[in-house]
Every structure is written in structure tokens, then in C-alpha cells.
Image 1 (cartoon, one colour):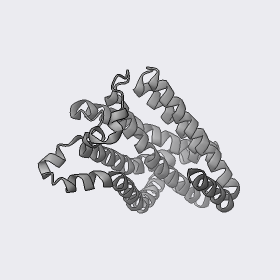
Image 2 (cartoon, one colour; image 1 turned 60 degrees about the horizontal axis):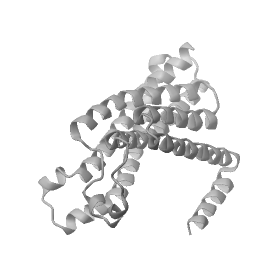
Image 3 (spheres, one colour; image 1 turned 90 degrees about the vertical axis):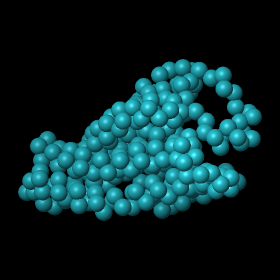
Image 4 (cartoon, helix red, strand yellow; image 1 turned 135 degrees about the horizontal axis):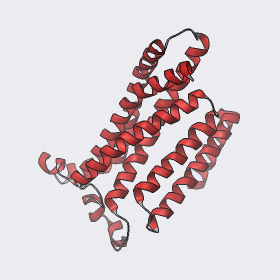
Length: 249
């Protein structure tokens, strides 16, 4: 069944996307290889945060530069994503230290799968949780950065006389339109993942205080909020970086 779903996906991607679909497929395969390499590197004891940074750079380069080519709009998107990821990684590392969000949550510990887990591992699970949050953030900010930089590039091509300030405000306008759909996409993605958690808490009639203090809720909520902050933060940064690159470089 998994094979059938994969074949349907590949065929639709090629039929609908054509040449761009083929490029997207190659980029997707490249990103999968990057994350496989990252998992292997973490499992043999290499620094988790460093591996996350290197994997993020690799995914950024493949997704943005390979798919969109080496040009100003790609450079602007790449720089913008790098700035936001650097800022939020500092925040997430601080939050991870304060909130103790690493490790298996209550549902995972009480599931049948926990019988097969080995807890004698050499990986710092708190850092792994930080890596998971940053990887989840990466996709959201890349989409928004590319949307804004591509839109501003088209605006500049048609009206090259616009100033940096005018281009910036155009980018903010585009970002406002993109923001609502991006935040809803994040919301539904995480709600889909957290559906089992919600049913579990409802079935056993946990109190609101217990829910708010559970590790399972804390992990999901942190992922949602960090991704949402990144989606908002990328808009002004991407608009400013793109405007500067188009007018001054």
C-alpha cells in the first residue's frame, strides 16, 4: 500500500508539475538524504545542535538554490531563512533548558511501543527535541521567504524605479496575504498530529491544570508557537533583505 501511494504521488507530481515537478522530486530526494545523514550522525554521537545547523543549511541550499536557481531572489530567501533560524534557535535552546521538553511524553511511555524502546542511548534527548522543533520550523519559513522574495522580484522587474522603502512595504503587503494561510496550515498540521493526544486526554478526563503541565501538550504547543513566531518574523526580514538586495546589489 505504501508503494502504491508513493507511485501515485510521483506520477501526479510529474504529470502536473512537468519539468518543475521533476526538479521538485529531485530536491525532495536530496532533502531526504540530508536528514538520513543527520540521523546517522546524531546516532553515532556527533553534536546534535551542530548537525541540525548543517542539515538546515543543506536543506535550504537544495530547496531554494537548486529549485529556483542562483539569483537575487534565491539569495534573499536563503539569507532571510538563515537569519530567522539563527534567532529562533537561540530562543529554542533557552526554552529547551527551562522547560525540560526532551524525551518521551506520557502517551509514548504508556503505549505498547515503549516496550520495544531501549533507554540506554547516548543521545541527549533534550537536544533532539530542539532539533525536531527547528526542523519543523524550517519548512514554514522557507515557504514564506520564497513567496515574498519571488513576489518582490516580479514587482521590481515591472517597476525598477521603486525605492527600498516602497519595495519593503510591498513585501509586507504580500506577507500579510500569505500569513493567514501559512498559520492555518501550521495549525491543521499540528492538530492532525495531536489528535491522539486530545482524544487520550478527553478519554481519561484530565483536568486543565494536568493538561497544561503534561509533557505531551508542552511539546506540541512549543512546536506550534515557535513555528508561528517564525512565520511572522520571516515577513519583515524577508521583505527588507529582498528590497536591499534588489536595489543596492
